[in-house]
Image 1 (cartoon, helix red, strand yellow):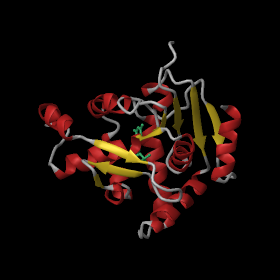
Image 2: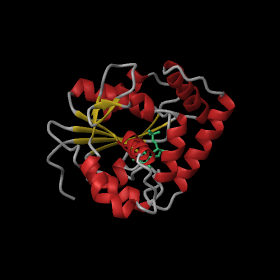
Image 3: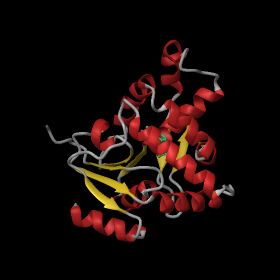
Length: 224
Ligand code: DC
């Protein structure tokens, strides 16, 4: 396969594996663009909810959605989540809730939604390079990327990280519910027919359970 002209590093893995933090650190250090594809799906879910668009009327509204679906990302500052801008409005705290995550996970299983999002994701491939964070970045969207990372971590560790993240946003969540929600979402993401969450054959797998973010970045740099 031809090498892409714009260098791309894909970072895939389940929720809470550390993709967001690592993608942010790499994007800031390399001064590359960042694509948070999960946030792109979340923004579409938010947009559909706000405009009463369902899967049934999605096709007939597709041109209208495309014209209005202007999403961009700002890597922001370390320790804070990557900022999601919709038509230049910061909607980070609106889309990064567990409720939105559940809604998004259901929508993301639908082929019509994945087909819509596909070209939007490729549009982020701009010089000097792209860090692409998601579930199918290395397997489907940027299957031609030279560098592919797959991050994993134990479910307990991922739930703990999610809880800390949500607490920082001022949201209190019960650990048992969080574990259950994560399990359900993992299952849905891994077992869906279209673009399931699986490591690309040519990816490097890193278990982040016992590593701090700096340790993960160090491993990635060694690989690069
Ligand atoms: O990474 P996240 O939690 O923000 O992702 C939200 C949901 O979007 C997640 O349940 C699965 C879905 N998703 C996807 O199907 N494909 C991607 N490339 C990214 C996210």
